[in-house]
Image (spheres, helix red, strand yellow):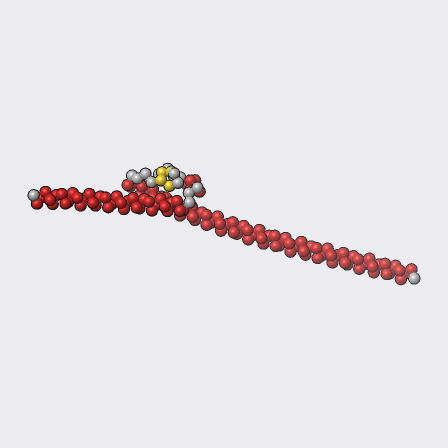
Amino acid sequence: EIERRKEESERRKQMQEREAMERQRKQEALEAEQERKRQEEERKRREVEKQEQRKKEAELQKNMEMLEQMKKQAEQKATNLKVAGKKITEIEADDLTNISFDQIEKAREAQVLKERQDKIRQRKAESKRVDHLARSLRE
């Protein structure tokens, strides 16, 4: 009777130990799965941030190139073109973060329109000179 109780007690202990180990194993597996998911989400988030950074840098480079082109044109024609309240010749790299592509594009269009109007004005003046010359030669 006593031996049977001892054996039964030992079996219960072994069963409890197995159950405890099984619970611990499940808990560890759950924690490992959660950690894996967390790492995967972190990796995705970092990848998205990298893509956004690359996109921002590409846009900044594009804006810089457009501004350089506009600066060269402004220097050749000696114009006072302004973008976001600053003269085109005074804009530097750190100012590009505050200036949007739309503002630069609008200023470029204004510059092209002004150059076009200047050409038209010059051609009209030249036409008037030629006309006056022809008239005076006829007389």
